[in-house]
Every structure is written in C-alpha cells, then in structure tokens.
Image (cartoon, rainbow, N blue to C red; front, side, top):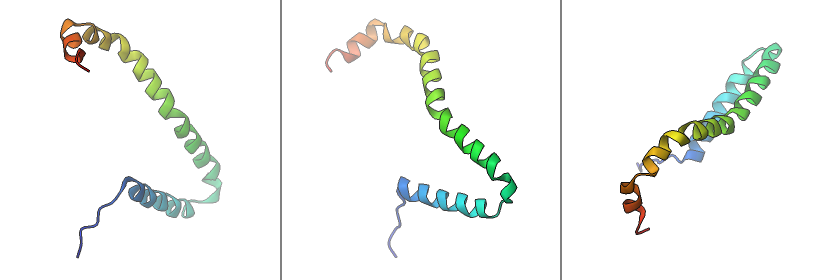
Length: 76
C-alpha cells in the first residue's frame, strides 16, 4: 500500500463534509443561528489580522530600526 498524502484542499474538503453531515443533524430552528455564526466568522479573519498588524507595528519597529537589522538586510 502506498502512503496517502493529504493536501490542504483534501483536508478542507473532509472538514466541509463533516460540517454538512453535522448540519443535517441539527434541528432546522437553529439554522438561522448557524448562518449568523458563519457570517460572523467570515468577517473576523481580516479584522483580526489588521488589528494584530497595527498593534504589533510599534513593537516591531524597535527591532527594525536597529543597526543589526540594517546589516542583515543590506545584501538583499
């Protein structure tokens, strides 16, 4: 038997199938709540990434402005 290597897409598809199976077992009166949850999750990644980048910028600037950093990047 050969080694089966799962790709990120393959793993994502498995998770999607699991979500759909679970959804079919949830009473329909909860569908609106689930839809709201999905919409909330879809909004979060960009907001969280932007907030984290902004919050960490001042902290990282201290390291970026060191002479050692200039030397490290000088040849690139």
